[in-house]
Image (cartoon, rainbow, N blue to C red; front, side):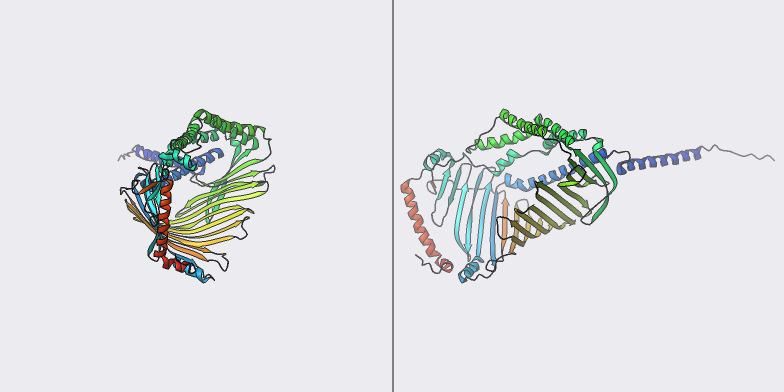
Length: 553
């Protein structure tokens, strides 16, 4: 019997094998790509460093843009809509028992005091009005009112004289001739300055970008070294890092700065950015009639601009070379983010002689940390300025610390630290801040030490902002006979959009200071004197509490 064997070509098995090999190849290539991206295989130290710097600049730009947008969102209602605000200071308490019984009475009376500040403003129409009220024992004791627009500024004390006293800037020549005072044509508002100085993010980025490229192009591979097995540790956070060291000899530093200065000197975009804001402010001041404003022409400003860089170049050229080096050490994580940066001046043996700068910035889960330190060492006079922030955010709640140190001993040393907690839920924002401040000064015999607590609460809608808070300040080194602290409550209510109406200055309700006659002044003085006597009689009970030995008229 014949046996027949069927042998099929192994095509399917072969295709499957190719598929497996291909998949494995793709996995290997993908792994190599990931390794290249994450472990910097084949990357030079210079490339690793510059990529991290690019990421760092982009992050700073995004942070700045976010902060600026938040500021614009906050300030926009004040610039575009009428704003009516009322600020109330009350519950003023001084901690301490003075030896003088009369001083103790004054402190007791102060507890019933209340200061109310009214402010109404329409930046678009250049109008403002408002006033300050002093309340004592639930009684409005004294009021000061003000009003001004584009050219008029008026005020009055209605308890002593019913009319406003006002200055019309259109009468500036008369005022100068009569009183010797030179006044502007109109008053400048915060909106005016904002419009004159504002600059777009894209404009700044386009100006700075060529200098970043110039730095990158002129940095030599030999100036950059890398240690891929370094580590980073700060505030309990530890991670692996790459330590990149960038070194500039004296000559290399001069060469780079020379190229930057020469480029800046001929940079029309940079010049226009600077001159444009200078010109805007100068024109604003001149058009508003402010005295002693002398604007340089564009050609004159250009000469001064060029001279600044020419002087720099000349100074660098004549400065003798040294063996000092500028060394920058940065620690970079696996995501190409710079965790820390340190700048030092080193001597001939590579010994660190002078710290210039040290910064740390990282985010670890819910934690964010920032520290920026500037160091000065001038002929043995050392100084330091440091800002630090640490915050932990969970949901809508953030807790942390903020600190600021300015140390220029023996002349002055200021150390401020704050522990805070903030929260944001729907339309309500709250915060509490516990602070300590210590100040030493060569001009003051005694150190100043303060501590205290500030609480805030704000509710926002599209048309209103209602805030309230408390302030308590302790004088930690107060003398035995001095107050140990002070506390008060603050309330602020702001409403946006309601039209503002200010009184017109007419002879019926106002006195023009530029044209008032001597006879009118004498009549006003007599009316004020009579009103002052009536005021004292009306409130004689309060004045007797304050000054019992002074007889009432």
